Length: 277
Image (cartoon, rainbow, N blue to C red; front, side, top):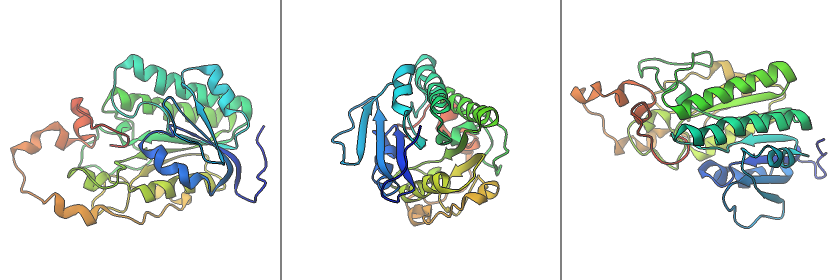
């Protein structure tokens, strides 16, 4: 059972999983403007909770703990889990069992909107010569990408079967600034990430939607036309950082799979550290 906002804010209580991660830390402050109470969770210490926050240390693979965590929330932003490639057993608990536990808890408690942090790595083995939209087939570049494919499929099932709406955010590379030439294409600024979450929560009806999390960069591998109803209009661009990674003429190094496929180093089992690559 969800609660009614007492202050006129859009939500009474929001749940943010993965609140201690890179993107969770960026989003945490913004949620205060959207809900009376924000329940923040992670498996690591979250620091001092603000007056409007309810901090929970929860392992997503613990079904009963997740069930208790979800009780009483209006909507969920699910950033929790492992955000890099990892041994399958670790991914199984955090990204597969944990995501199932969250959706099952949402079903039992009547939560009807989830924003799910998917990843561009669900399509990472598509070539860089392709431009993908929401209907592009899955071509995961890693076991991590496979777990995000599972999350997208699970969320589709929970929408079709139980009516739980989900926006799957295929997040590109969300950092303060691009770290390499690939990120000039995949860059998602923190400000644009927060706006994308806002659109995903506030749009009246979303059904089951897929949107690529990317800023307004000069070059793009992704087309968000089919998610246009969300009203997401990125304000930032990687163009401001282009001079840090000057263009070079094609050479033999471009035969490297990391240059051929959109997943970059993930296709070689060499992901960068941190969320949103």
